[in-house]
Amino acid sequence: MSIWPKPFMEPDVLKQRMLILSVLDIVLCQEEWLRRYQFDPQWDENTAFASINNGAGDDLYILFSPEGVIIKGFDHESEMSPHAREEYEVWPGIYEQVPPALLHRLEDEALTKEDVTFCLWRESTDHVWKMGDVHNPQGLDDGSDFLLGMIYDNPEDYVEWAEAYYEVKVSSDVVGYTFTNTAITKGMIMELNPEVDLEIAMKELQSIGFTVT
Image 1 (cartoon, helix red, strand yellow):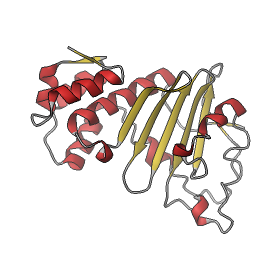
Image 2 (cartoon, helix red, strand yellow):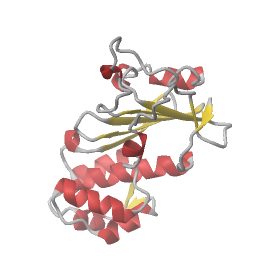
Image 3 (tube, one colour):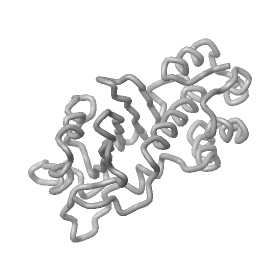
Image 4 (tube, one colour):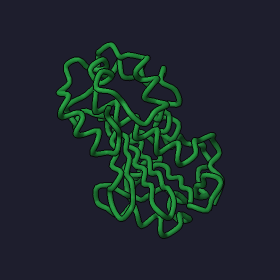
């Protein structure tokens, strides 16, 4: 196996960031199927689940388990997609060296394990992210920069995306606050989206473990 070659955030930071992105999507979009980000703190067996789906056939699944964290990404336009291969097989090296306890977490049908163009993981005892020894001498694009880039490092990038995607004005002050806190006020929710059903949004936010004051 190899060390993941690109900078990436620590697991606890990643988990909190995915929660925050899901919180913002809940407030900005009442139609769940239109949201890009999802987070479930109690998905299965002490495992938290997070996902990104851009609605165009590309997705990212992240599982935070006692054994560690595993991330599976699928860029449908990548030449490394099983759909681009004659035998419809996962690209050599992606899964072969994943620790069995983490790989097992992808067996749920909802996670479409075979639809994958890259995978990285970090066991609970690891200090670095790892990947398999993927056979890719041509340097084909696996979609990781594209999909991991949707986990925004700063509020400004999220605001730019959200305003374009939802076609609304998004408060950079509220987003900035949310990026660095574990709670949101009712006033902030209404400032982000004056059209939101406050009661429904509050229930959703509390159900994923985010505090509303």
